[in-house]
Length: 162
Image 1 (tube, rainbow, N blue to C red):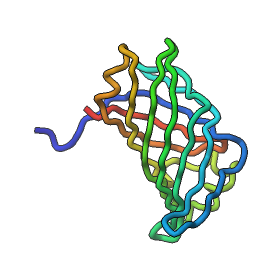
Image 2: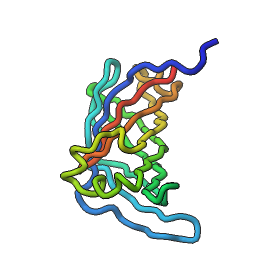
Image 3: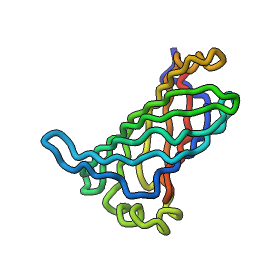
Image 4: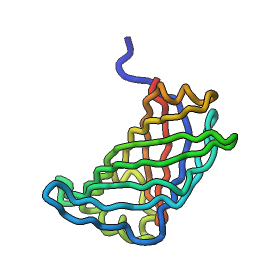
C-alpha cells in the first residue's frame, strides 16, 4: 500500500472568462455569490485535447481568508468539446486563497502576470461526464488541478488520481 495517491498528467486547460465584470449577486442570508461567465478556452493533454465551449460559468462564493486576505469557494460547470467532436460536461469545486500580502498584486492585471502561482493557493477537483464511447474512461476517474490566475481567465494543470 502506498503512502498516498499517485497522479498522471491529464491536460492543461486555459479558460477565458467573459470580459464583463462578474455578476455580483451579493451577500444573501446564506452566502456571497458572484457569477463569472466562461467565454471559451482550450485544453491539451496526451489523451485529451479540444476546446472549452462558451457555455458555463463559475458560481463562486467570496469570503475572507484567515489572515484577512481573500478566500473563494469555486463552483464551476463547463462544457468541453474534444478535437474529434465529443462533448464532456466538466464540473469542479475548489479553493482559491489569496493571502493579505498578495491581494493587491492579485487584483492588478499588470502585477498579476508577474505574480508567482506559489504566492496563492488555487486547487480544483474536476469530475467528468460524457456519453462519447472513446472517452467513457473519464466517467470513472477523479482528478485534481493546480491553477493560476491570468488577467482574462485561469489556467489549470489537471492530473488524474490513480
